[in-house]
Image (cartoon, rainbow, N blue to C red):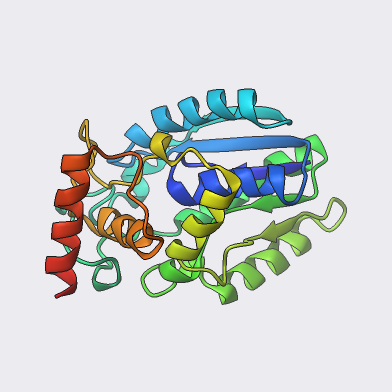
Length: 237
C-alpha cells in the first residue's frame, strides 16, 4: 500500500506506473491537490489518468481531489499563484515559479492521511532536474522531511520516498516509455489554456526529455511537436 502525491503530470504519472509495475504495490491512494495554481487544468488530466489506470493496472486505486485553495491568499506569490507572468525561458533559468513551501505542505497533508489509513510511506516525484530551482525537490530536503515526519509520528511512523531523486526528466521518460505510461494523457504546461503553450520552462523541459529519447511527445499533434522542437532549439541556442 502506498500514498502518492499525484498531479496528473509526466513525473507523477510515471511514479504511479512505477509503484504498480516495479514496486508491485497492489493498493495505491493518489492525492491530487488544488491549491489555487494557475495550471489547475492538470487536475482534470489526473482524473482521466486514474480512469485509464484502473483499466490497465492490476491495482486498487483510490483517488482524492484535495481542495486547499483556502491557502492561496497566504502563499500567492510568483508566477504559478501570484500576479507575475509565466516566464518563457529554460527551466533552470527561472525561480519565479516557486510556490512557497509547496511540497512541505502537500507532504504534511499526505502524511496525515497515511497515518489515518495505516500506510507507511508517502511518495512524490521530485527529481534531479528540479533541484536547481526548487529546494523542496533536493535530497537534503527529502532526508530532513523524512526525519521530521518520523519524529512527528513516532507512534505511527511514515517514510517520505522520492524514487526519482537521482534521475532527470529524460531518464524518467525513458523509464515511463518502458512501463507503458500514457503520456498522451498528462499535462505539464504552467499555463491553463486548452493546449500547452510549448514555451514555458515546464514545456521546454518536457520537449527536451522526449527529444533525448528520440520520441515525439504523444500529447502533441505533429504541428505542435515541430513548433515545440523549434522553440526548444532557439532557447538552447
